[in-house]
Image 1 (cartoon, rainbow, N blue to C red):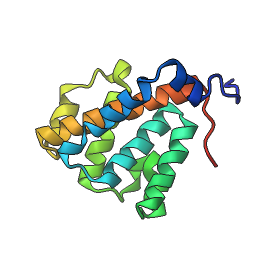
Image 2: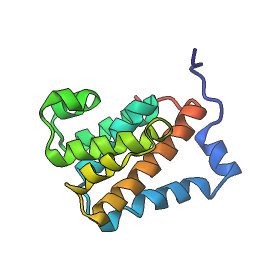
Image 3: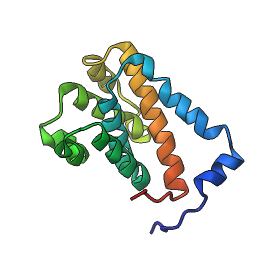
Image 4: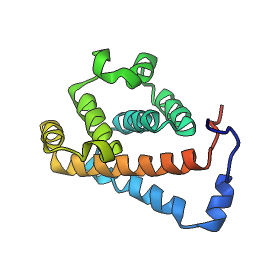
Length: 152
């Protein structure tokens, strides 16, 4: 069972490793030249955080999506995007790519997943999407490891 207390506060982590957070922020920002829509990035951040079971990041990205004005039904159905039937082809391709990368130990990111993503995204967009997925996976691993509680 997961304990509900924080193991290491974020400010303590930043004291021990002052370059860590800026490095992950820079990784996320490296996706910006790809010109991906902020809503798409936030949906991906939410989906990856759901997969990784990161309560802190799930809540954080739900709040961001609300601030962007994303319809609550889209936010609520992100967890079941394949069955929802409300997401664009681009969003569905991004979800599939994010899942393949997040579950890399299981999927090894098959060629078919790459080819499917390339049908919807340019090489630049796919590179940017990949960087964004790597960044949120890094944040999730830190928040889950140190049991960061969601800000409610």
